[in-house]
Image 1 (spheres, each protein chain N blue to C red):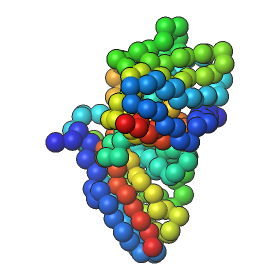
Image 2: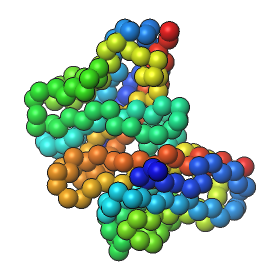
Image 3: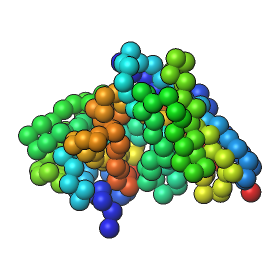
Length: 114
Length: 115
């Protein structure tokens, strides 16, 4: 069974600074997808970024980038130039072979301070 | 209008009551899911359906049932609600056709409180 672990229940960062959220996962599969979802106070789950395991290049989306270390089974999210609107719960998630059965981590609550 | 709509958004009920959470989608996706969110546990899969005739149990299906009334509608029922079913419930959809990256599209959640 796959597991996803987010070891930081809460984090804070000053506006305009950079923060990194950690995620590790456990799987025996070789082909899989990793995701970071954002849940702001509105509760809506929003996809932030995705990474295909077969791609060596780390995914980036504007201020959001990942550090994907396949051998270490690590998938961290870096938020650059943090903004107040980045305040949210962030969930790391995993699925293999695009089967759509997402397994989620426990979440990290990020507070961006002015 | 939202692509994935859940009703009700908030509900308070009493132990032993039957409650139904409804989900409808306009994305045209075949696959639909019900997840439950609890603090520190993330989201856990309750049930999923890959088409109207296909219903599957997820990780935590005990105490829940579902109905796929149409491609666009997937409802979750608690036949006899208990306090530890107090949680935030999410409906989600996904594509089946390629390219299929495993992305889920979520509703806005239904917060259920069982007293």
